[in-house]
Image (cartoon, rainbow, N blue to C red):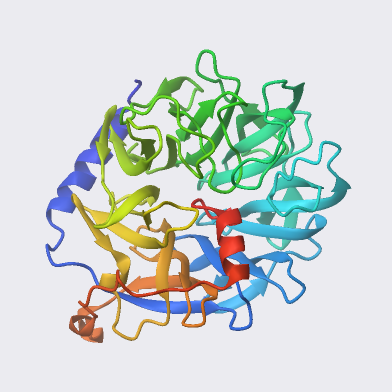
Length: 432
């Protein structure tokens, strides 16, 4: 695998910094981002300056892309791409925001690529200074976002024109599909309208690019149309890393070879990569039915495990300090079990609910993003069973951190509303 001297130097610096971190657990203050009247809202990404991106459910049931800044919500979906549904997810430090939105055009193959069940075309977009611009496909109908770096490069995947006979003819377990066209990993930009298709592993025919760092390294997953599921709770059989020149590398797994696509979210894929080239994601165990959060560093995979009593999980975001956040899900699995947001640092995984103030307004279900200041975003359950976006901010010692709750909240009973659970499953572990 190619290495650049800067990566090695930065990795050493980050490792040295980590050794100076305090051993006491970090504490957090949680803010319910709301909105109060919405049965479902999520914060899917954030930058280093307090800008948060996500989505909220409007009174008419449609999903709208939104941003929060210092707690103030702004709807960025109008006029959008002129379809009813949209969601924002990734952003960089220059305020560029990416996501996916429906257009007003019917999908000729009715693939339900966005997961809203409307039969409309779904496109990835970049929002910049108030203007939402659709990103091109590879000639096919639909495309989806992954992440955006500070150079303005965007990872994701886009359909081509090949009608693959191996694609499933019925909807996938996550509700997307039926799939007709192949979809390929791509990088858009930084020039407007530019799209680069990334190569696949030998014998694979489809793929998805999820994460990208400031060096242009990209991570994701590849497979065939028959064994790969796109959309919320996406799954692939192979986790991969692409070098800036496009060279593709297979990342080692945890023994799983042929994940069961009839089980929600089972697969091996890389979701996030930091500027030191350290990667987080998930990997299928040897039984091919369960998966754990993992860390890849220098071509070595480490199983991060799950929280006590849980069955599966995924590492969804890693910052430049090497801190990982994600979701750990109780048995029997992601379709019926309850997720818990986790925070991992220096070999220790903690339930994020154990690190927040005693009167936290939400039970934290999934953490989608963490920035270099340690701020965390995701979604959590209210006392009424609705799901709202949250922002968890590290406490300062002069702000009563010692009063944070140390009572284990894993046994707390959270009953999600029916609408919230349906939307939770359709958006999945990645925050789609």
